[in-house]
Amino acid sequence: AGSQLTLLPHSFPSRAMDENQTKHPDFLLLGLASWPEHEHLFLALFFTLYLLNMLGNLLIILLICSNGQLLHAPMYFFLSHFSFMDISVTSTTIPKMLHNLYMGRKNITYASCLAQMYFFMAFDPTKNFLLGAMALDCCMAICQPLHYPVVMSPTRCHIMVSIAWLLAHLHSLMHTVLMSQQSFCDQDIHHFFCDSQPLLVMACSEKHLNEMLNFFEGGIIIIGNFLLILVSYALIVHAVLWVPSAQGQGKAFQTCASHLIVVTLFYGTAIGVYFQSLSTYSGDKDKVATVMYTVVTPMLNLFIYSLRNADMKAALHRSLAKLRNVLTSWSWGSD
Image (cartoon, rainbow, N blue to C red; front, side):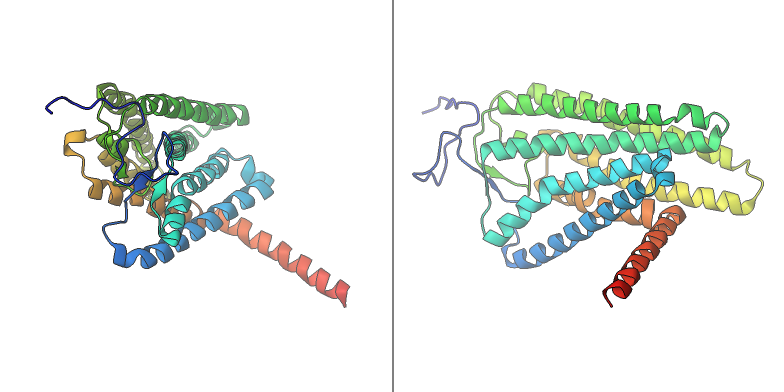
């Protein structure tokens, strides 16, 4: 009776095994199960935020891609990829949660869970690398304006984005393969999507390697990039202090402060989630932090990086004027 039950990888005793269940039974996503009376409110809220995030980021991508001047500027080239990553991160996590809330179910298959984890852990670090690239671009534009066209050439920008995608997918593949070797003692995931930390809490096989990978490899990616961003902005502040115009100083500081808000929210929540030991893991705190950087931060990005940007607003006005002219011409033609 005192011996430990040995479980096969990705199998566990289920409390509610039904006759249709396969060798790999479903997990249960219990992220919002603590507040069943508010499920309809959560459904409306998250659907609205998801829709706004999708439409806003799609608008940014369309404006940049339809404007050659913006598309060939490194800042907006990175921003278009960053907006695509915001869409990808939220589309990896939110639709499944909305589906479960609407259908009144909480299940997710083992394969879908690993797939969700893989794509989330690929898209989110890509945003991390893009934030570093955007900070470096801003630093070069302000601190080294004469060398800027050479250092941030279109070819180098494409290489930087390609490296960001490659490193992020390698990072995700490594974590997902290790997770697929785990044995799970339970099927209840106390989160609203499949992420590495809540899955490791459920694991009952050896997970020391997974934890070490989270701390060290994740630390290099997150902390290293965060330090690069801080150094970049420190150099920007130092350079701005030499700007003779007080108006120029104010505009530059306002831009840097806005960017730093996004950076602080992104890295503050990411560090809080992924750099804690499993023994001190708190599902409720993790859920709040995850909502911050998967739902709230992308919404703030729309305002901070784009909608408050003069170039983006000018491009929007030009696009609306063209659309109005097309509709007017079509209306006259139909008459």
